Amino acid sequence: MNDALRAGVSARLELHIAAKQYVAASGARHEVLREIVLSLGEGEVAAILGPSGCGKTTLLRIVAGLDTDFDGSVTLAGKGRSHPPKMGMVFQEPRLLPWRTVEQNLLLAAPGASAAAIDRLLADFGLSSHARHFPGELSLGLARRVALARAFAVEPDILLLDEPFASLDARLAGSLRHELAKLVSRNRATTLLVTHDVDDATELADRIFLLSQRPARIIGIVPIETPRSLRSPERLAAIGRDVIARGVGPER
Ligand SMILES: Nc1ncnc2c1ncn2[C@@H]1O[C@H](COP(=O)(O)OP(=O)(O)OP(=O)(O)O)[C@@H](O)[C@H]1O
Ligand SMILES: [Mg+2]
View (cartoon, rainbow, N blue to C red):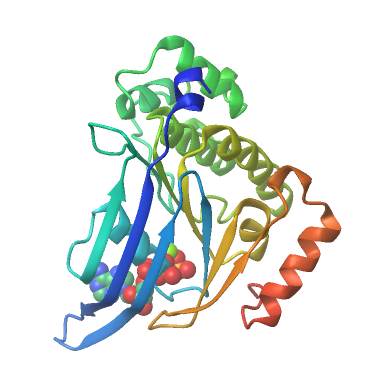
């Protein structure tokens, strides 16, 4: 990660979703999110942990500004900045441009990035030998790395992550989670990670927001005081037990 990014001042995020409904093709309305209120400090990493289908992607799309059809407000505030906060996003599927190489996918997201910055990012994510590969030549694990590297390439003030390790085997998810933990600590972006995986939340977050089944509401908030780099397997297991005791079971 480059020095400008490390030195960058991260933005803050304020979210209030009073209600979010979808209208089905039949015309019926169904409520997906209700009274979601959260406020993230500079550089804070929050995990939104909730069961499959509860509305996590919907929430993230609202924060990203991709869905404006909801009751409430999103405020992304830079501190001492004249330009709006920069946002990096990792979608639930890697969504790479198939006709562009790995390197080009990163450059398209961050046209102003220097070759050195892109090279460093590729190295951070173990992608140096894949820079000139096309997405079709990558395994899912590698494609997910590229999607993460692309989100960091914009030197984000706000980082939005939608289940970035979904469909990876446990060992691969674990190693990628570990790398991401190091990068979010260095990067200092205000980060919102949505996941149904307790391990994602306990390893990465400063605070975990627990969501109910649909319509999703916040049913608990678990702050994690221990810095990410000092969370032992025992500490992680204890936090995970606390989370599960509050009604969020591991995915079955
Ligand atoms: N465009 C849409 N129109 C109508 N209903 C939708 C739309 N998008 C999502 N939904 C419904 O809203 C609910 C929440 O969807 P969402 O994708 O936000 O959940 P999720 O928590 O991200 O799920 P998953 O864990 O599977 O990723 C689901 O019941 C889904 O079917
Ligand atoms: Mg989703």
